[in-house]
Length: 250
Ligand SMILES: Cc1cc2nc3c(=O)[nH]c(=O)nc-3n(C[C@H](O)[C@H](O)[C@H](O)COP(=O)(O)OP(=O)(O)OC[C@H]3O[C@@H](n4cnc5c(N)ncnc54)[C@H](O)[C@@H]3O)c2cc1C
Image (tube, rainbow, N blue to C red; front, side, top):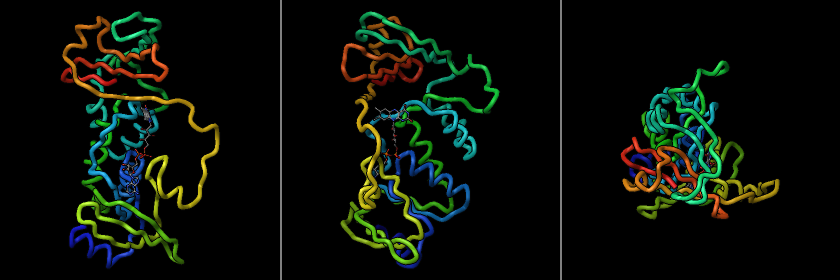
């Protein structure tokens, strides 16, 4: 933690401390910033997104982006307006096409009667940086990267949160009225509070790998679409997008 951060931590009880800077934590920070509520977001990582993960944003998510003034940036960060959005199920990348689920490009889609925004493709490796840039610009939001929450204790008027600076090894306790666990499906907050998951458990496994290849278009005539390799037990999503600097996702 820097000296300024340390000073801030010692002198103030922050209204909200968000643990986790994935899309959920960043979205909460964006909303608190919108409402001018002071908050600190602590994230153990450095803000980069090493794994592609989610690719599709729902209409409701896009409505939130519109509310925060970043909808247009999100649209530009994802697939281009004219990119075809068909889902194509194939035996392999160069194999047989089994089924095609037609889906027009965003430019061809009619406006929705119930919302000014519609669903969008904007994989997390593109989406999170837009959210992060926006949240970084908000006056009431303080972002601390490479800071890990190790434990917390509920007190009469809030929560004492123990943090470790992963760069210096320094340990710090800060007090907050509300701690919000946005630390992912296996997060410390849920586990410490003893909150169990209900339901069937793991339903399936999916993998996303992004890679760049100028050769992919030469291997297949299908053009810019999404492919799912049905020959694998685990679904592999390949997202090809020739207009985006020959970048492809799998
Ligand atoms: C292959 C794949 C495809 C997917 N496709 C879609 C899709 O199309 N649409 C969709 O909506 N979703 C999709 N998802 C799901 C989506 O990626 C997750 O729901 C989303 O990432 C969850 O966000 P989150 O912020 O809750 O958690 P995470 O993204 O896991 O973020 C949690 C953050 O908390 C930080 N953290 C954890 N513990 C601590 C701690 N103690 N101290 C400090 N920081 C901590 C972590 O470093 C991490 O950055 C997909 C997921 C996968 C794996």
